[in-house]
Length: 430
Ligand code: AMP
Ligand code: GLY
Image (cartoon, rainbow, N blue to C red; front, side):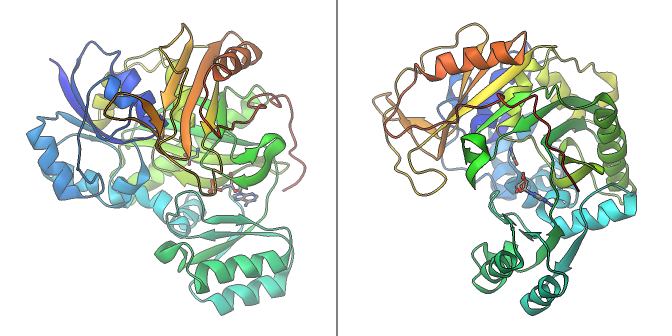
């Protein structure tokens, strides 16, 4: 029996998900909303559907005869789209709004971690800017100021001095630069150490851990410049010790899944803690309720099993019945971004050199669309992610950059050190 899928989202992550779903012999039709030029290679992009509107998605799922809805980004989950679909009996890969709260409310995530005994940086939560500022003045030191709600990856300010923290509190709570998301802030202890993303599939009971992967958030080489949505990714991190890896799986991910289940929050999808490996051990930086982007682009090429079968099993609460196997290969993904990103940038710039996929190298399109004449043009800040597989990280990196150099668009920029500092560990204090 084939499965018709409606896939929500339109980034590089969704191109990677569509590419992997399309390898399944059981895929019927694939519809994407909003999709991009990448997802369009495997199915129809549905125009005019607001993926954050539960009633509209339910109506589209019925019209498209979808047997499964796969949710890529966090916004539809936070908006309760998975709940609306389940209420109508449509199977969904993606947690309920209550389950997704682990991402859309950082204070909820902190409370859950405290109750479940999950290691994370100490933080205080404030609804009043004066109280937050008083706390910073009183305790001094370096803090990280975090908007409580979803802020498209921009709500976190890592501060060197109390003065910077005061300014960040003012921006979030008084100037309202993150809107409602910043009405409540967390002032968190600043940690240091290398970071890794720990993805897992879960149906709320069974957990299938994925390999570890590492995002590169700052825009420039050497982790300099402002943070972005992610400029590149590699998997696996050879520097991550086996005992730390197992401890993250057991003492973070599995505990969080149990805690969500114990509180009656339905959770079927991907759960991924962002971890920092401090001198005091692994600590959670944040929880996410979906695949990372660009992490998905580096993980899915390593998945040997049928993604459609896994998504169906997760959606139906049968994850324990399926095999989830990964290759030993390494992957490196290099993001090519629009000139000016993460600041303002132009769109509509023609892209050349994307071509087809060479063996072992995939170009996952993100902010890229075809115009009426079929010309591929930029349509966002992160434009595409070139992902290569290799027997080693060095081999994968070389293949990725060779492909990157063949692609061009005016203003394009990318980091040249993705996966290059892999051996380095700088866990120099907690
Ligand atoms: P997030 O938007 O939550 O992924 O945070 C963005 C980045 O901020 C993370 O990848 C970390 O590099 C940094 N960050 C978050 N929390 C802390 C912390 N407590 N200490 C140091 N850096 C942090
Ligand atoms: N790669 C970071 C994120 O998707 O949140």
